Length: 412
Image (tube, rainbow, N blue to C red):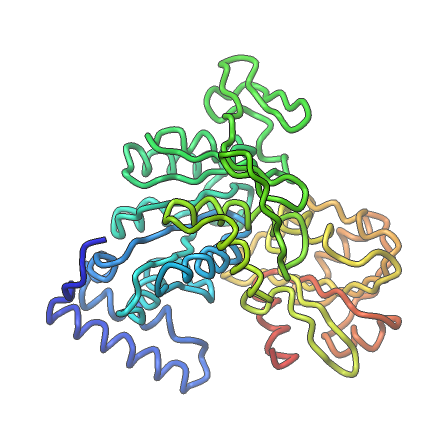
C-alpha cells in the first residue's frame, strides 16, 4: 500500500466532485444509482482518475463470466476483518462504475473490485492490484463479446508478468491457460459444472480429455495444475490440509466454490480461513439475488441467470417439482441482443415444474421450451404469471435486465 498521503491532484478532486454531483442528479431523476454516468463525467475531466484513486489501496480484482458479483461481496466481507473496504458492490464493473465506487472510499484500506471480463487487463494496469481472482470463462453476450478463447487470450496477454498474486480456478482450462502467463498463481479446485466451452485445448486446439475431475490435452500436454486450495463438500481445504466448514446463507454449490476462492484471496491479505468464512455468513443476498420477496400474497425467490452456464447452476438451486417456476428473458443492450444462447441451455431439467414465461423475448423462450418438450404458459407480465402459478413458493429465474424489471415490480 502506498501510504496515507492524499493522491488526488486539484484536477482529480474537481473530477470526483463533479462525478458525485452528476450521480446525485441521476438518482434524483430516478435513473438508477448514477454510478456509471458519474464515473464517465469524472474520467472525462481526469482520464487518470482511476489510477489516482487506487494508489492508496490494496486492490483485489475479481473477474469471471459468472459469480463475480457474489465473490466480490464475499471477499469484501472477509477483508473487513482486516480494515475498511471500498467495493463496487452493486456490480457496476466497467471503468466508469469502478471509478465511482473508489471515489466514495477515501478512508478505505482495501479496494475489492468486480471487473467485466473485457476490461480486466486495462483495469489491472490502472489499479496495480495486489491480487486478481479469476473464476471461470464461458459464452455470454454473443452479439458483442469475444469468443471465450479470445477473452482468455486477452487475459493471458494482459496478465503476462503481472506482480499480482493470481487466484485462479484450476478446473477451468481457459482460466488456467490465461493465468499461466503470470509468475505467481494460487490454484483453487473450485469445480466446473458447465464444460461446453472447454472441450478444445486453448493452447494448441487439440481435444481435451476429461476423466473425472481431471483434464488434459493429449496432444500438447497442457493439463490441470495441482491446486493448493479446494472445495470438498461443505469444507474449504487450505494449503496445509486443514478443513474449514463453509456456512453460507447463499444457496448452492456454486456459492461454496465462490467462498473457496474468496478464502484463498483473503489469505493473501493475512485473513485466516476460519475468520474469512465466518464473516461470509453475514451475506444474505447480493444485489437482490436469492432474495425471497412477498408479492400478491406469494413468496417469490429471485434468481439471476445470464448465460447457459449460469442457467445450469441456477437449475441446481431450485426446489424440486412441483415447485412452480417463472422464467423471464429480455434481450436489451445490457443483456446482449442475440438470444441464440437459449438453445445451449438444457431446459429438460425443468421437467415436472409448472412453468410460466414472461419478458420481452418470452416467445423466443417459448419456442425453446416447446422443442425441449416442456409444459408451460406464456404470460403478459409477472402479475399474470403469479396468478397462474399453483400454490407454493415460486422460483423466478431471469436474465440481467429482466431481473432488474422484476425487482422494480416487487419493490425490492
